[in-house]
Image (cartoon, rainbow, N blue to C red):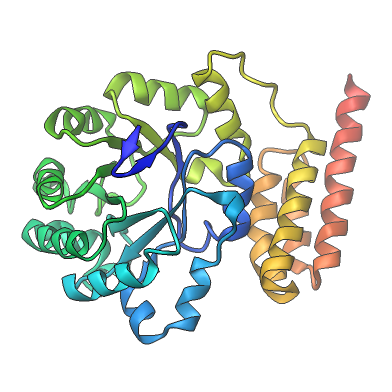
Length: 327
């Protein structure tokens, strides 16, 4: 698949997710088969006015390339300036036109822009004039069920120079409730000439293959399904390559990746931030396992990174011993 000047061989993309897709998380997911990873969404206003504090979101490593940078804002001129500021930090730029979070919507950005397709055109046009970097947009189906306009929005973005479009087929008002309507991805694929990336409700490898088959989209974007589960990307890639799906991760496998995640986080951001932020990731790594509730409670009471590491070791090694004992 070609996105502008960027050649991509693996049609598995990691979604940009606020508070999640920082450098340590992206490196983990890249190692498990992500063809393209994205930063958290980066505020255009923050880049221009806050500078250094916002640029922390752009911390990167050669090992994660190619890297997409997602920008959000509501002003064409500011977004164009932001694009110039970050174009050397990544290989692709994406515009967030779908975030349903109230704080973002109140600022006029994210999915608020779905109510103004004309302004979306102005934004894409301004960024396209400012940079030659591959440019994509991420949209939702519309603001609500009475204003489904993803095809109109996509055609405007395409006409103004977007190189690809990602569709999460829910409205802003749906949030993440109900089911993503993959039929809308199929309709979008037929309506535009540029690549279409499908997003929404991919939680097992078979979901990804079903979306590709049903919609004809060019790639799938993985979001919530990868929380604590980088093996999802591995499994999708195996099926796409015509291989048998690997066995599910053992507790020992989970411990190995969780420990790597803690180490990367501590090295990148220091022990204080690692202690606070790794709690949620460890809760996700333990999801579905016996005793996970008690482990989560202990993790959320932990007072140091070393305590997190010890709790993780004890929990997963105990679970591994139980599995081996059953066998």
